[in-house]
Structure formats: structure tokens, C-alpha cells
Length: 294
Figure 1 (cartoon, rainbow, N blue to C red):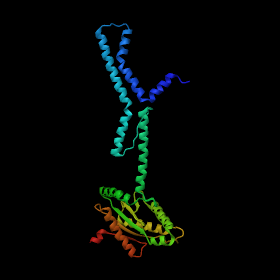
Figure 2: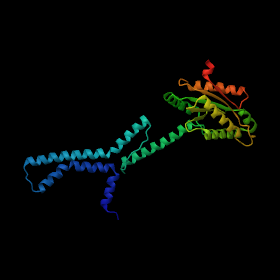
Figure 3: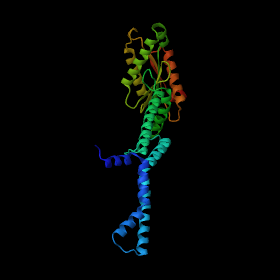
Figure 4: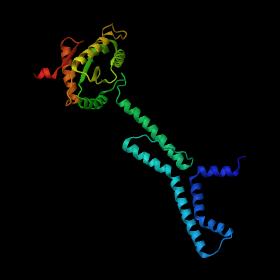
């Protein structure tokens, strides 16, 4: 059988009301307990020492009561601070709460709920920024990342190139073989892109069969070489029942300037892409802004 003293201590630990009651009871009766101890010790009953003991005991009881109450509600203060940080900065709610009373239970439950909610929100944000079919970024993701890359390029005085390409006669694949085959083609293209990207390159699917590569630290001549490699790899892509070499793409390349918006970059790359289509598709064309303006 569990001793009653252990049961009582367990009840005090798990009940905020009991804790407050015990602390307030002891604090209120501190002067009385001090007076009883003083008189039981056989000390003088002169009014001055008695008043002094009562005053000191009252102060000690009051300070101890306030300190205990401060400690009891500390998890609530930590929770309030964490929630304010979450609302202001999106910081995860983490609390070093060890208590088993009502405040501890509520604090842990709120922290767990907020962390679970943050996990769900993080997944939703990722889904909103990802093309579900290919696993690449989408247009929204690209528009956010490209601003960062342009700022870095301007800060480091380094070039940045844009490669825009789309699959040749992709509609014919859907019409002749079905959308399931078309989807498998897009998935295969996504795999080719991921396998050939450098660690700092960006890739996104920005349309039905249209893709965009952002190549930091890359001049237009280097971008042409990279695009040719992608073009060759796509020609080798095998998706049953399509014949080998049926999957091809036309590429347009533009070396951006720091002041270019995303729309301007895509527009110039699209002009080069249009040239590639005019030249018979399955080729790489670049748009040299300096050459165009001379």
C-alpha cells in the first residue's frame, strides 16, 4: 500500500489549487507559527521582540508566497512569450515544462499542438511551392528564389543565366498515347533535370511542358554548354511506348542583368526559345542582349 504521505505529495504536485492553498496557508500563518515557536522557546514576552518577530515573519511569509506563486505560473509566462515569438517570427514553440499540474499539462498540450500545426503548415507551404508531378519547384517558388539569387549575383558581381525550355510536340504525345504517358514523360524530365543540376542551380516547372533553369555564376557561353548537355540527356530518355529519341526539347538562354525582373528574364529567354523552334526544334539558342542592342 502506498503511504498516505506519498499520496498527499502526489496530489500537491498534480494540483495547482492544492499548491496555492498550501502556500497561502503557510504564508498567512507564518506570524502565528513564528510566535508559537518564540514563546515555546521560553524567550521574553516583551512587546518589542514580539512585534519584531511578527513583522519579520509577515514579510518572510509574503515574500515566500509571492515567490512560490511566481514559480507556479512561470510555465504560463514562458508559453505566452513563446506564442508571441511564434506570431511575430514563426519560431517553434518549445517549452522546458516539467510540472504535472494543470498549468504544466496545458502548456505541454499547447506546445505540442503548435508544433504539430507548424509541421502541417510547413508541409502545406512546401506543397504550394512544389510541382507535384515532377517534384521540382513551381512558378511561385521560382519567383521567390530568383529574387535571392539576383541579389546575391549583384552583391558578388557574378553572372546569372536563365534557361527556358519546353518539350517538342508534347501535345501530340498526350493525344496519341494518352495523358498517363505524358505524365511519365514529365516525371522522367524531372529526373533528368535533378540528375544534371549543379548543387546551386534552380529548376522549376513553370507551365504544362515548360521548364526553367536558373544558373548562378554562369555566363551565357557556359549556359549553352549546360543546356546542350540537358538536350542530349533528354534525347536519351526512354519512356515506353515512345520510340527512342522521341522526347526532345527546344532551349532558349538569356544572361540576366541585376535590374531584370523575373518577367523580363523569362521574356528574353522565351525570345531565344522561339528562335530554337523556328530553327526546327531540338536545339539551343541564346539571346545576347548586348549583341541585340549594338
